[in-house]
Image 1: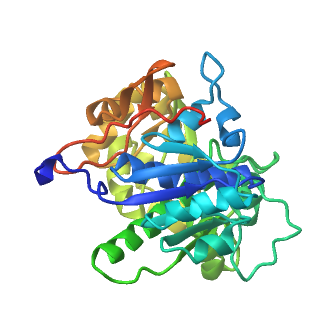
Image 2: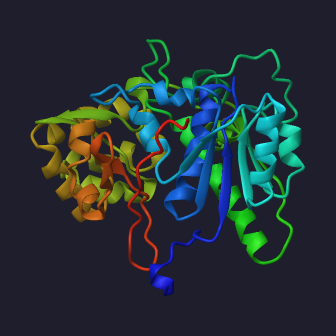
Length: 364
C-alpha cells in the first residue's frame, strides 16, 4: 500500500474506556478525542459499561430515536461492553491494554490506577486540575463554563448570562486531549517513552477564555457583557443579522467600505476613542447594513479584507459555499439507520479527506 493510500494513524491502537458514573461532559470530551483518532485511521476500541454508553440516549435524537450526538462522536470505532467493576471485566481490559498504544479514559474512573500501570500510554480527561479539591463540586459543562468566566462574557448585560450553545467546552477539551494523544503516539513511534497526558476541562476553559485573564492583567477589570457599549456587535440587515468584527489595523478598510464621511471625524481615529464613541459609531454604520443582504455584505467586505460575519441558522450553515466546497458533511451509510450526513474532519492527508465510518451498534 502506498503512502497516499495509508491513513496517518492506521498502525496505532487506542482503547477508549467509558467507565460508569462519569459526568456527561467528560464522556463527550473523551469520545471526541477517540473519534478524531479513529477517523484518522487508528483502531479505536470503545469500552462501554453494562447497558452501553449513556450518550447513546442523549439528545438530539434521530427520527427513529437514536442519539445523533452518539452517532457523531463515535464514528469509525469498534465497541465492546465490559463490566469493569468485576475481576473478569478488569482482566479482559488488561489484555486489551497489553496490545494498545494509548488508553483514553475519564476521571474519576474506578480503574484509574489499573489503567495508569498498563503498557499503554494513559491519556486522562478530568474536570479540574490536580491542585483543586473537586470531590464535593458538581460537574457539568455549565459549571465548567461558569468557573472559566465564560458566563461573564455571553449574553446581554441586563439579562441572565447564557451558556454557550452545543458542547464547546467538551469539544475544546477533546481536541486538546487528542493533541496529547498524537504527541504520545509520535513519541512511541520514535522509540521514546511517551509521558502520561492529563487534560482538565477547567484549565481548557481558562485557555479558551484567555481574554478574561489578559484583560484583567491589562486593565484590572475582566471583560464582561457590554451590550450596546461593545466594540463588536450584531446588527440587522435586509435578510437577517451580521457580526461587525474588525481589528484595529482593519479600521481604514472598514471606514472606506462604509463610505460615510462622518467616520473621518477625529473621534474615530484610534481604537480608544472609537470605544468612547461606540454608540455614535453604530448610529452611522447601521443604515449601511440595513440596506443590504448578508451575501452582499460578505462579498463587499471580503473584497476590502474586512471580516464581517453573516449569522446563519444551522440549516443555512451546512449549505454555505465554504462547507460545500470543503465537503464538510459526508454521507455515511449506516446498516440500520440508512444514510446519515455527518461532519468529517476538516483536514486532508496527501490530498484526500477522511470520510467517517458508522458508529458501532450497542454491543452484546
